[in-house]
Length: 155
Image 1 (tube, rainbow, N blue to C red):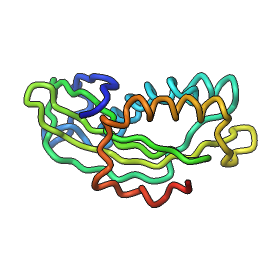
Image 2: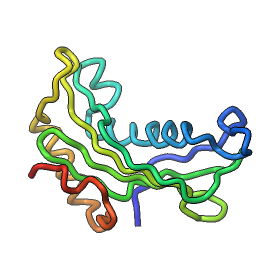
Image 3: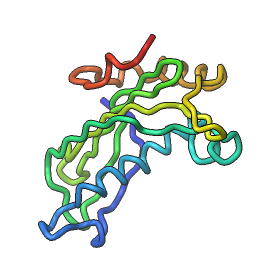
């Protein structure tokens, strides 16, 4: 079980000389899908522009499981989410739409940053409430097994 974020069609420019999606574009696709959640949490592009607060990824674990070819369509699913006072911990999967196979997964840890002074800062109470509500609504859909960064949250 997981939470749908976004779909993406693989374009020719993203395919490498091995005739499959280049590794850099997996990360791009995951990052663009994660923006859906950041906007829900009021931490995305709009927050960076108006509040001068955003997130920055500090650690990732990416697994390339099945090849993705040109013209394939993939769905990006959120399979885990948690946070502490300053960090976001998430895991996403890329599912090839036609075969329903997992093509890749990425787990990452992000820090919440005040862009005025480029320092890590704590989430505002409003954002903690939004995230807590999201977790409560979706915790049954999360898979917390085989996570690399669980021990990095400080609760």
